[in-house]
Amino acid sequence: MEAIKKDVFPSQHQNMQPGKESEMNPLPQFISPSYKASGKLEGKVAIITGGDSGIGRAIATLYAMEGADIVIVYLNENEDAKVTEQEVLKLGKRCLKIPLDLKQEENSQKVVDMTLKEFGKIDILINNAAVQYPQNSIVDITKDQMMHTFESNFFSYFYLTKATLPHLKKGSSIINTTSITAFEGHPTLIDYSATKGAILTFTRSMALSLVKQEIRVNAVAPGPIWTPLIVSSFSAEDVKTFGSTAPMGRAGQPCEVAPMYVLLASEDSTYITGQVFHINGGKVVN
Image (tube, rainbow, N blue to C red):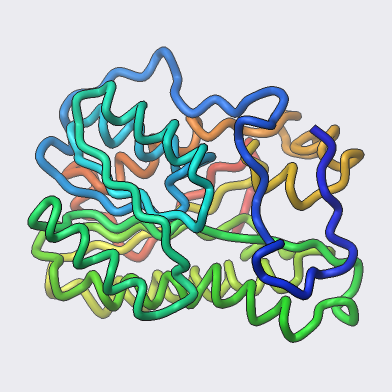
């Protein structure tokens, strides 16, 4: 699929949508046939933002395999969300789809209320949704674009964490998706990289804030992963070579990222909090 290059930021927010996963060629691999579940999340309830496709779908699928019921929150990607729901249901778990704009603070409380009504509890929060709009220079980044990117990528994490926290308990886990760009920057993703840096610091601060409550907060920093966000925001030429500069020489698949989210939500990581885990095909990040 030829990507839509966003040289000019759209003035209407409804035009600023990621691509559909069904239109990608090749399709992302959200589940590995070699993955073997062992009930690590049996009986848990997980909220996953951006759970309709990409890394979010991979997380939802593995979590269901491990025994969790799933809530996926997304903007309006109903076709992709339906595929995720079907995968979760096939695994014998329940899936609640919630299409809401998390840039609006009040919608986070709606997510929490709907989750509690359906499942009665919340054990895991995955803040994963994100947008990006490449620009060649900071002078091309309008105030509207900067605000939209921060509201989508960072404010939504803040709002949903705040709304969810009163219902978490000892042993609960919050996992935030940051990015390799938070550490090494990116010449055409200046505002996006800044949001990912904010998420990094937010993760560390929340981990310290909640450590006495025994609620763990960690982050995953993916490198070049093949998701709808890539084909919807980069040029066709850049998409063709996406991931080639990684030491492994290729982009990663969502199924290669999701197992880390399983680890961080399970009892296998009870002594891990405030940390960031890099899944980037071999890039050394200090």
